[in-house]
Image 1 (tube, rainbow, N blue to C red):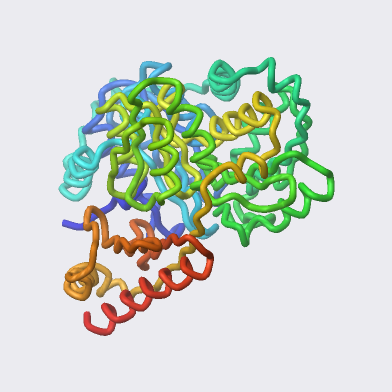
Image 2 (cartoon, rainbow, N blue to C red; image 1 turned 90 degrees about the vertical axis):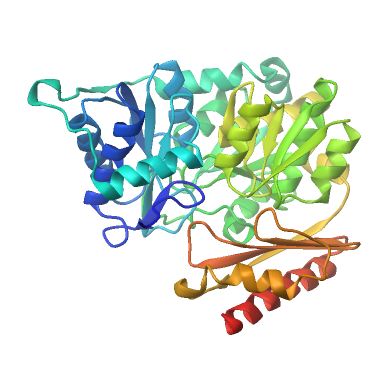
Length: 452
């Protein structure tokens, strides 16, 4: 039996690795396991979004479950609505930050969080064995539209920040929505909070003409230039489904995901004695420093937002985050939420009357670097065992991939859950050190490929 789910949902090239039949049957399998009940559905701006959404709706209705279509929306909007509409599940058609030729499907449970690894296995079992619950003619589900999800979601975020102070600050904000669904939430949210908003790449277009959907520093040069040109206070960039936010300071410098996460973490963790932070093994020393300063403890997890969300719920923890700019704020919801993260950063700037570069300057300085190594699909699974042999005499953590820890920094090597490659993250006290460590990791991976 094969695997469908990667690190976050099922993804594939449109009409090649991901077909209409697959989406139809994944939806049937998901509702067979999670139903009966109502299922909230949505999509991002990708090509094939409508095609796959219609296939998902057909699959859902055939099991006797009902669908509530909230229209195109960020993934966190769908997640916010699932429990509020008393739904049994949510299905989002998105491939998040993947390139334009990809689409995919994320399955949420009744709490709005992506289903656990155990439930994914049940859905896969049902899918591969074709054990769908197909209802009789008189029990076919009904589809309804729900028009106010985005408004309710934006109102939900505003309840968690100091609106008055943000209004007073009169910040100028540039929002780069990557031609996708972040454009339906963040510009309006920022305007509601009293900011002056300038929008980039706000027309929904699955060809992603503005920039690729992943908000990496090299993809955000236009945002950096715009922030400087209009004298804005901050730039906010989303990925394809807006569950993450990356920030640009007033000088056009792009923040690492660790830095924005640390700015939020240092404030949130101080609010309660002995608070708990949940973060994957790919996070760096900066987060350890911030947690220690706030007297908080860290719970490490394997990489994957699904794991962080479930651990947050299990521990009733105070905050979660990832080095890629995903921040999980449980008082709002225990999932990555780009617009919520944007509101929190803007709030810190407004309340403390500091520029974003000042907030970054207050953080301990580490430098990070990352790269990826293409791996032939047939070798991808063999590499870990070889890496474990190659590094057995080193100080390492093997919770997820291999993380080598040195006095001057660390490097993490792990397989991508969504693409045929291995990723390498490194961190050092200088940029040169981070580069050296990332090269060390990549060399190890290349060595392992040769031996595989």
